[in-house]
Length: 58
Length: 416
View 1 (cartoon, rainbow over the protein chains, first blue to last red):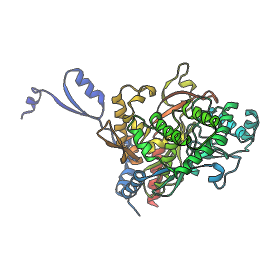
View 2 (tube, helix red, strand yellow):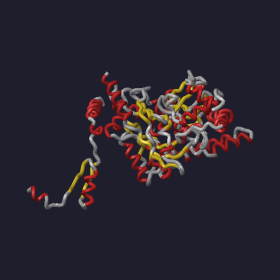
View 3 (cartoon, rainbow over the protein chains, first blue to last red):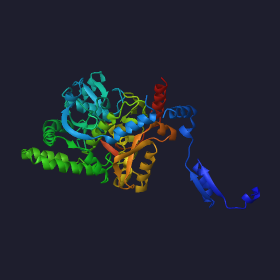
View 4 (tube, rainbow over the protein chains, first blue to last red):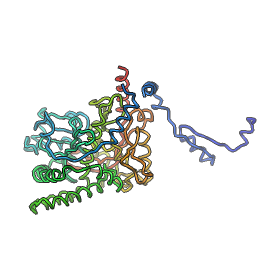
């Protein structure tokens, strides 16, 4: 499919993370599936590495 | 060494299989080897006199007058401020106490035996509502009631328990969860069943009518939370049997002292991980607001540690408006959210409103930190002023910091 055809179709959106982006599209009557996702440990790299190390012990 | 998964599976099994049985009533002096009249046990993690909240100080006054160590609140205050009292967390000696949790030498305690694993846990006898020590009251009536419980009610209760050769608590807990109690802030079903059980046996004791009337007035007066202390001791007996399994990341205690909240995990027994106690998101009684409130307080979060209270919110739609929540769907959503931070589910205790699914069980600090989602706690709110009492009820959320600190400490212990 040519890229230009993409813009002639109905949008099918999967929004990951910030709910506000999904809500904005919903207000414009666009179909959105929102995935409630946050980076592990709130994005704290030290805690992420600890969790990863501990998971290897499980 | 076990893997974390193996240790957590072991902890979960121990939490699931606990068989709490009320086997006796004994005083603190009988159950704590190094106790003395100048030692008081309190809710939450360790705390100094200087840091105690208003209601906890009020409860100390009441306890010292009850023990006849002080004759007035002023004298009690001087004794405590001069360092004349040793303070220790209830949790560290197998006791759990609601709200202030202040427990002293002569107080009779429920003795709960975990029949599966052989260990014991204890809790005071709930005094009912009003000017009670757990909310920091220290009036003459408060002290008189404590004396009455010790001298008049406890011996009778002890006799009933002995005649019955113990009372199985599992059946009361299981039935109450099917009858709309989450057993932390709603205990009406459990209390009515327990009272019914007691009344049928009290009339067999050939007691003087005056005593029987006093006991009936106490049990059936403002005492809808009578069963709370029993389920707390039952859950403490379950949690203690699951404690000390290295390197488990499952929580075995959450407790608040009105100043700090602390957690303990099975893999690092005896260690507290603490931070400042949060305010409670509450519905306040008329005339009160958050400004009047003591920060979160009480050992009763042992309910949530065992998958009850806020974790079982889905079984208690009748409690929704009392806690300031909106709609039964939010109650179910609270329970759903708690599944995601738990290692597993109860086998025995199930939700009739959720396809008979077992209640969420075994709070895993790894999941709490990864999802940045804290356990929720259903709770009463005490006034920050001693003696005012309960001013509302709501839901608190344990701050993340203790879970982060426990995770770092467990990782270090595994490395070593």
